[in-house]
Image (cartoon, rainbow, N blue to C red; front, top):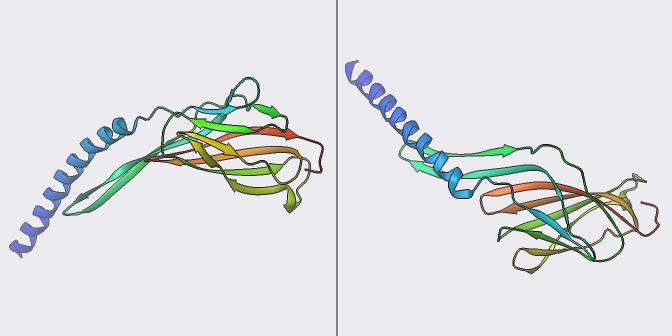
Length: 168
């Protein structure tokens, strides 16, 4: 009976020690990933605009101990700012101030709920931290959501895009 209690207390002590070590490691991981919200620019023919970042998440690296693994993250929703409006059929480049991201772009037509007025496309990397956004398949006005995944972080950003006259 006493041997069982000693083992339980030993495990509890190890768990407290592990929790203390991990709680010290997580803030260091947050500093290492730089919890500053990335700048997401829309480079246009004309003045550049910043996409409205609606959510930014930092993922802490998994810490492995003899008791198991612990990972975590932190998501923030910045204060709502104005959603920029892009007008025109010219090319749009997306630039982020951090390397190693992938981007999915979701279009939702504001004039029609038809399936043809909704879609998701991947952005194409054309340089270090610069991506070309493919336009929606049909002309119209769209709410555009950018979902970016980078090393140990992700974000969602928005802008509105109107080009041509179309059903969407």
